[in-house]
Amino acid sequence: MYDLNKFNEQFVVESYDEQGVLTEFSPNLKDNFNFAYDVVDEIAKIAPDKQALIWIGNDGEEKFFTYKDLSEKSNQIAHMFLEHGVKKGDMFVVVLKRHWQIWVTVLALEKIGAVLIPATNQLQPKDYVYRFKSGNVKYVVATPDNNTPQHMEDALKEYDGIKEKFVVKGARDGWIDFDTEFEKYPKDFERIENKTSDVSLAFFSSGTTGYPKLVTHSHDYSVAHLLTAKHWHNAKSHSIHLTISESGWGKFFWGKIFGEFLMGSTVFAYDFDRFDSLKLLEYISKYKVTSLCCPPTMLNMFIKGGLDKKYLTSVEYVTTAGEALKPDVFNKFKELTGITIYEGFGQTETVLSIGVLVGQTPKPGSMGKPVPLYNLDIVDTDGNSVPRGETGEIVIRMKDKNPGLFLEYYGNDDATAETKKDGIYHTGDTAWEDTDGYYWYVGRTDDVIKASGYRIGPVEIEAVLAEHPAVYEVAVVPAPDPVRGQVVRAVIVPTEEYKEKIQDPDFKTALIKELQTHVKNQTAPYKYPRIIDFIDALPKTISGKIQRNLVR
Image (cartoon, rainbow, N blue to C red; front, side, top):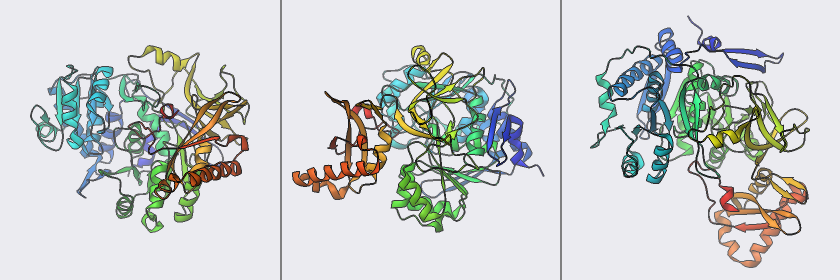
């Protein structure tokens, strides 16, 4: 019997140290690599009955897909798209949440060579207008949920470039019924050749400081995520992995298809409408999920929702990314479950860049260490490496080939040139490195507060304030000061318990002093917030990231 754990080895060169920790990771791909043909279709031949996807609908409906199922259905869908005019290089917006159709659509578009642009169903008409125009989009496939087809139709009053529209889960006038139409086509498909360097995927960035940019990736992006699955998620061919993200976000592609399928793993998907921590825990237990990846906010929701280790008896590994993991969440999760959380960091423009890999020991609050795929450094504003312990910008020193690193910002040469210059990719994120080589996140380059000669990162202060029972959410930003240049300002959304209490001016004044003292006792005194304001809600992007530029 073929060992699927070895299948991935043909695509990468790897080395390990004496403790089994990864020290070298270099994708080794032929010039015409294509994930759909060379991974999914090949596993379908080697192990046709191997389970690839366990899908649970919002109403509890179950569907199980083998690698052969995904191969054949993606062939049918590729035929359907071709019949309706889709060609290599066409830009194709896909809004499919966690519907089972997203997996076969990704594979079908890979086979054709069309460019997948995933998007969330939370977008409004003006968001679609911007995305359609920015990406020169020609085709869409949509969920009927959240009025998505109507929002797209409204957007088309200002954009006339769409050639065809597909909708899943039922028929709609003016749209092709995806689920019925694809079944008409044959299950075999003749390979369409591509180059590994061709664009295969494009993400709109989160747009925390301006309009989202369209980030393009080539076919090697999928294999670069072998690092994510194999060496961070600790995926094996027997694994049943759950990454909670929906398909509108890049994190879906980190943990719901590319790396896991390269390992011959099974992906578990729960297509929920509203997050219910207890129901999800019950499904994790019922379907014997072995590894879990979700953002710290959801880990905290599990904790607050009554997390019990009885739900996680099958879980072998837990990872987190998307925002800073606060030490109190790390420690409480370990206390309740006995499971260690392994943190990771990356961007829309990259795959996993920094993390606690298999065999490494986490330091609560740290991002982990640079991964061997990239040549990472921390530099000052002149591009010079900074000493350990000093804050600087995280950069990637580029090589001749940079698998997993984005190609360009589509249609925005100036932004590409600004971010990639002098052989360096500038992440815009800042950190410092400790004596053991672990990176500690500080903030975005434009978030760093410069007060009386000190450089102060908002994340550490936010983590300390979040420990206080009065704080539901917090954003730390700079405020101008005539003497110090800038001072630390904390903008806090209070918890329900404190919302009424702070209406009393005396109580509010006392609480502000209490919060300031709390920070002084937990960090260097110069970092405490000299200004504290309370607010009902913080401005956020659609992906839930706080827009600090709007808080200032």
